[in-house]
Length: 133
Image (tube, rainbow, N blue to C red; front, top):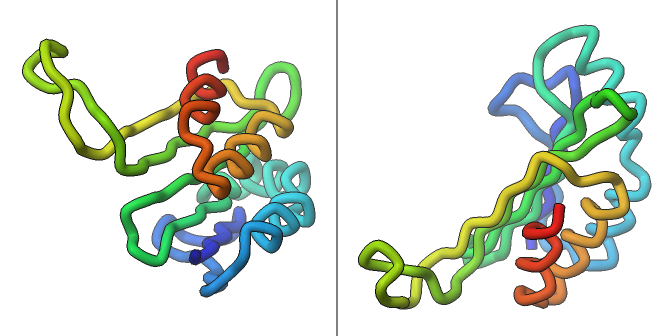
């Protein structure tokens, strides 16, 4: 897996890359990321929101979490994509494709849990987490 870290001072296409990381290293990177400090910087310099992304080696799975300052403190926006069963023909049938999940209402615990579920390929639990967010 590849880990991408985007800090407040980066441009929109700039990030720090760590290739060949383990799930444990991804979760440690989330814990060590200065979400509060980087979010404050992002508000000040108005470039990008701090973001942590994980992409599978085969590039068919991706998740990202990005922090923003909300009314009640730090909030996370997140999206993920992975292969799965998707609705087709206006929902009348299903077929294999890419599932897309997104939310704008994660807290820090939800964001880390989404990463953990994604890394463990626990997609049914991941769907439920995004749905209830």
